[in-house]
Length: 372
Image (cartoon, rainbow, N blue to C red; front, side, top):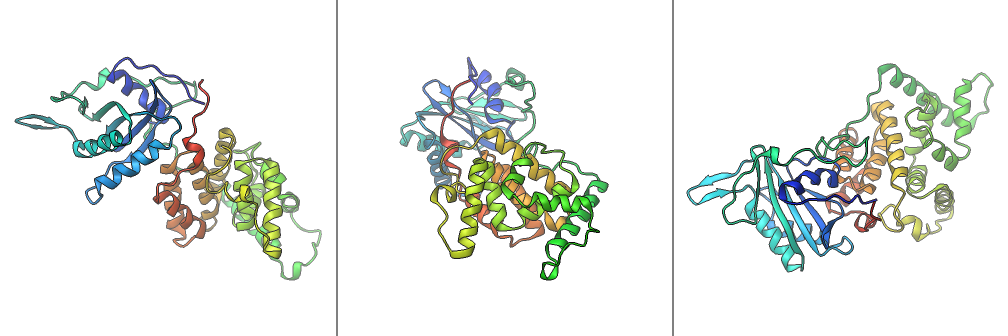
């Protein structure tokens, strides 16, 4: 859903950028695609470093921007901790060379430039004037908040840290996971004795219908009991079921059931997975329900926070994919870093890292939603 925000001048425009981005950028270049006089969101890039080709940087940035449906213009904002540099010829704004390259590339792509601004700790200014002056940050004011629960005051890393889990909760999940793992791995699948923990048996019952279980965790994302969390961790640690979870959360229960059938057929006879299911992982096809992805992300983040360290790569990798699917590549990259700290060779994390490192975004990120 796209919220209509109005800006009367450059300072007013800077006021609404955090709302369009969903956070207050820091050490970033933000590109805002326009169609006519309306902007439909924001694309954040890390500031270019000294070892990077500015031409390649600009080509990649404008190439991504041009993929947004209907884009015919662009605005650019640099957020930096560096200050404008005074010379005898006037002020030189930080990253002026990079901005010139970006604006030139945008012009070559046929995009009109709406504005190009710089925000530093000491104030703000424009790259489009011959003699820039620094305006006061107080000119900008606070960002408008479209929802009562929205908070855009944090930077692009805000909200990436895992939720807090107390030691007792971690211990309960760890014991439940150990019991469940031991039971699932019993030699020769020996029969139950009747002396097992009833909660353990209940968690086994959850695993009798994997898609139904993945659907059930979305109903109480922050209140899963220890054995349910353990069952989820067991599933996510198995590639066959993990792929079902990701596809189902990005589609629906029927999509999960189809994916499970396809995965079992592939494992049993090598049958090909239907294209529409396989392409979901690559961000192609119908756009997922954003709220459904957000709830699923809450589920796996909470599971990762409660899991023993060795069991965190699976939920963290799921969190990375869900963040990427939501257009939060910065968050996805941080979750992959957490995985790398535990298991540098975790397979799916390496694949996702390649996708994100190559600036690959889901196709649905480039489609405009209805205006709110």
